Length: 157
Length: 247
Image 1 (cartoon, rainbow over the protein chains, first blue to last red):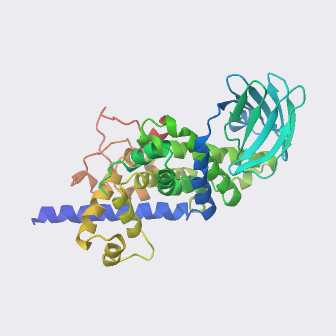
Image 2 (cartoon, each protein chain N blue to C red; image 1 turned 90 degrees about the vertical axis):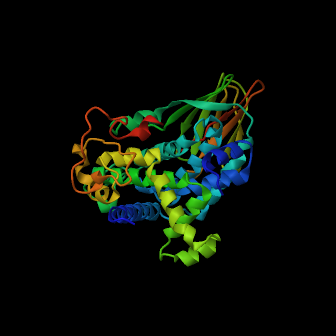
Image 3 (cartoon, helix red, strand yellow; image 1 turned 30 degrees about the vertical axis):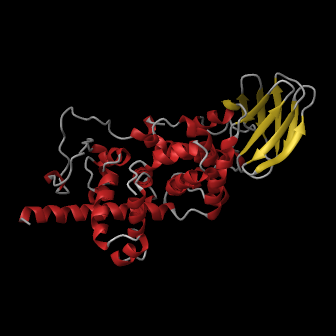
């Protein structure tokens, strides 16, 4: 090996060592993922088989909070999810979800956590409902009326 | 073992309903999610809520992934958004005191959130690249990074590979990491891909022009503390933030 080649491989080894050390630092600072995180991540795949129409978030009052100066966010966040034939408006209170189906009318609303159903309620004649919620884990709603069904995207609070 | 596109393969299989393929994606990218969450100083229940939400969203995003290389970027962006949402929610429910604001800080970077940001992005780029490596390269690097370190003999036994193949595989894996677009884009912040320099250059990177250096082997330009050479008008990558443009 020539002297130049030796220097190059020496240099390469130094650069490789530094890269590996930086990557090890990245893993260390990420910390070991908890069992709960891994189990939850794997179990999330059960939602792969959902075949209802997913309702996209069309309005989120919290989006305004992210850019606005604090102070305008005393009210509970308001969200709107819309599918083709049905929409749902939601207000996220600390332990209660208040909502209304649009178009207004009777129906049923189910609250789903990652592991499955956690609450359900019938709406009144105007499509209004009130559901208890606990904790901060992501939730989604399945809303069913005689005409349509809607499944919201995951809601975080 | 010679699967050159492990993430693309896993995405396709998961899309077809393969739970084991999904689990492989989880294993590969859980550290990336954890890194972003940690950078936002979320722990315990908050951290678990964010992580859970990201994976639930990814299940529904699988069909929309056209370019599997973009998956790590999607994961970083989604995780960051969920972190910001949790932070905003906590602020809504607790009085806001700017003196205790610590959402983006790291104890090591007190007073220099910019350095924390750059370090965080560099870590995430490296974890993205690690998640994207073929299995045999990724397994090897993970064993090479254990603390305390394992000997090549132990690693060879663990992976069932000849000790003589460890050095070359390590070099190929690191070369692949180095040329990963995420890593290239971030190292360009420093005008140089030399990690030794980059580590100490967090604070003064602003004046440096981005000088992409894809062909770096044996390049005399890496003699360290010299400022990067500016190549007039030949920046194929805009300085900084390629990740945000991919969101």
